[in-house]
Image 1 (cartoon, rainbow, N blue to C red):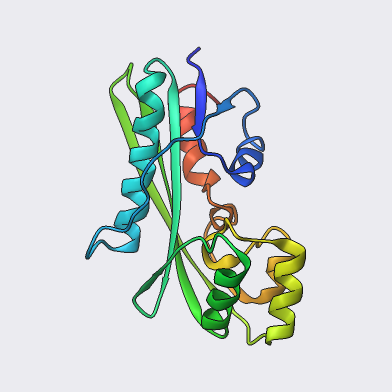
Image 2 (cartoon, rainbow, N blue to C red):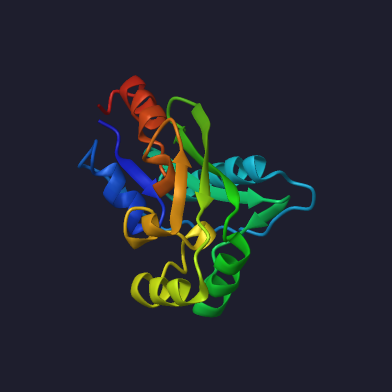
Length: 190
């Protein structure tokens, strides 16, 4: 059986993949995540998922590699990972009361069989009208600095949301397992 590699440094994606498969390893792909001018958030997520899978496959061409990325947008602005407290504070102040569209993309790459699966799951989250005190308390406890939209929905971040609309609850964590499990079944891994 081919080795399976998750091309991600996200512990959240690793944990979610463990729900359906136990035998895989993770490798952090080093990919430039700069936004390309006039690129849509969906195309950006798909491009980065593919680039991450290709980067890992360069070193492991016999493995099946999963690359993933998540982007989000509201009011024609692409949201990025905040990386620190100050940026997360500003981002949450901006997102208060807004509906945000998220794109969770992944690529399954099997170079041995010359197969590339590229998928994207879309969902929306509406942030509730919280105050700065709630933001500060949330950020100090949760530190969601590596999360697009400054939200960890699998933890305390769910309290910052008014609504999530999704066909796959795992998409908001960054790896849509419904679509991924279908592909992994096709590849004989499930």
